[in-house]
Image (tube, rainbow, N blue to C red; front, side):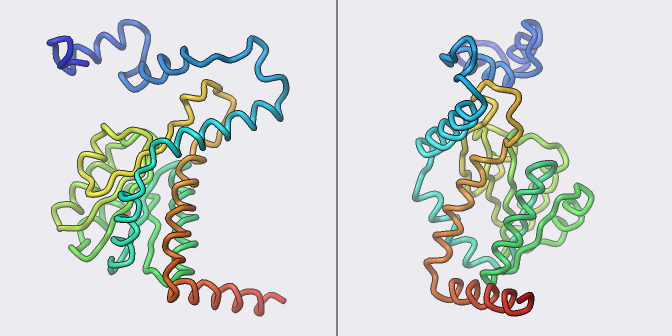
Length: 229
């Protein structure tokens, strides 16, 4: 926008705040929401509202998916000596879920959800490591520093985010975009990780095409089932 109007990024930011938006990202969300054709009284009931929310989130994410990029990330995960899933808030919960899932496949995975531990860990990553950041905004200050450190160490960086044009995405070797659930134009919905989880399920299924990983997953499931039955 700055380039198109012959101004600067700072000017655009000031403009956004002048018209009541917190940031340029907030402006984009509001503009997109204004284009939605939502019935005056909602979709009829809560069941229809939730169905519409999930359907739109998935259908829009499907349009954004680049199969080759996802397959490239999957190959990087297979080759990595260590994988660090990082995220804060609800993205941190997703990072923990993914860590548990991929450990069962035999991958060396660690979840980093504390900003202090992110900084510490990023100082000792190596070129054999892969750092995967999960974020809707892609602008968390502590995480930008974490990825900068990992990048300096030669580590591979992947970002799964709702905004491709973000500081974190700019640092990344792999950028997997997802649909931002704020665009659905309903502040009552709290599951802002739905699109990200959809992409992670695809990655999981691609990894399980590897027979060794599939066997390890089956072995762990069998062992756990036998332990608690």
